[in-house]
Length: 171
Image 1 (cartoon, one colour):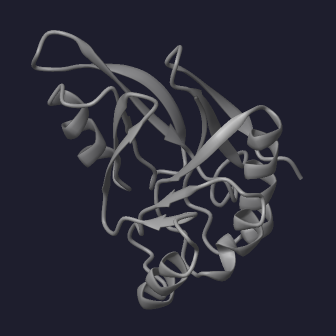
Image 2 (cartoon, helix red, strand yellow):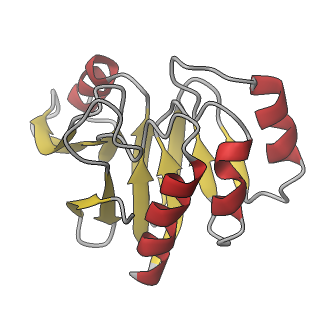
C-alpha cells in the first residue's frame, strides 16, 4: 500500500490537493496528515480526490469543531484523530504526531513500524534504533505549503517495501 504523507499545510488547500493528486496518480491509497491543517476549507479539494485522509491537528488548531463535524459527515473519508493517531494500514503499525521530539520518543519504543511527524517544516527520512533491538522508520514530510522552507515537500511512502521518498509539491 502506498501512502501520501503530508504536514503543515497551513490553510494552503490547493497545495495540499496538488500533493494528494500527485500521490494518487502514483498509486497512493491513503493520506496521512501530520498536523497544522488549520481549517476545513484546506481539505475540501483533497477530499474530492477520493482518498481517505487521516488527520491530526498540530499546534495551529483552527476550528476543531468544524473539522470534527466534517469528519462525521464524510462517510469515513476524513478521519480526524485529534492530537495524535495510532493507525493500522497494510499490516503496519503507524503512529502520527505533529512534534518531532514526540515522534522520536515514540519511535524509540519499538511499538511502531513507522512514526510520522511534522512541525519543523524540514523533511527527514531515517531509521531510529529502538529499545527492542530493531529500528523504526521516522519520517517528517516537511511542509506541503513550503512555508519557511526552501521547498514545499511531502513524502510518498510504500508500506509494502517500507520505502519513503521526499517529493516536491507540484505547482
